[in-house]
Length: 237
Image 1 (spheres, rainbow, N blue to C red):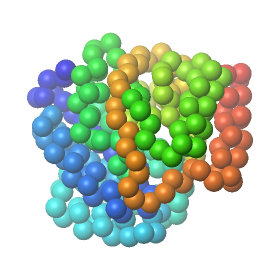
Image 2 (spheres, helix red, strand yellow):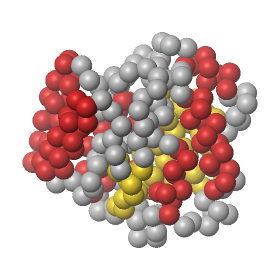
Image 3 (cartoon, helix red, strand yellow):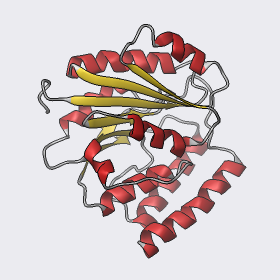
Image 4 (cartoon, rainbow, N blue to C red):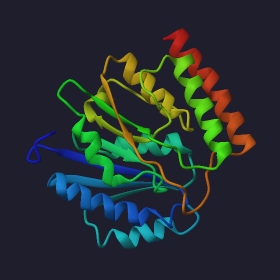
């Protein structure tokens, strides 16, 4: 595990209508970070929330001076939020997970324990998915197909619980604005020659809001974009 004196850590959360969970995530992130290092920042990318999330975050900033806020005036999509988060991060290690509390930020030390000198990214994988049955089925199919067609090196490319060395982004440039960014991220990191490790993490039922992905229009848009992403990364690159 990394030396606490040398650990430099950015933690960020993409947030879209996560008013019921985002404050908890920020406060828990601060507790975890303080146990790991004195050199940390917490960033929330609010991607055009309309449920009062950004007003809550603005008030929370008075209690958490380490909190940095990035507000998108309009909803740009999950990929746009992640790209803003990676751009805003200034520390040597960058950790992110979603603001909906389906992952537990207190498990961040599990990732750090796998970040040996020869590893550049530690990716979580869901020990057990806690979602409605239809989402579990679709999720496993998606996971299997993405691993197969993109030749991905990890078990669960759809698990947004990741710790990445910031130097990775000196070589990896992301373009996606939708949820396809997770596939783009993993594949481009692999193609750039960076090294992966994995660790199992817990996944919890959503307690606030609803998934932005599971509607026909969004699924169709994602599949359409994945086709072009496959051509770009597997054929043209």
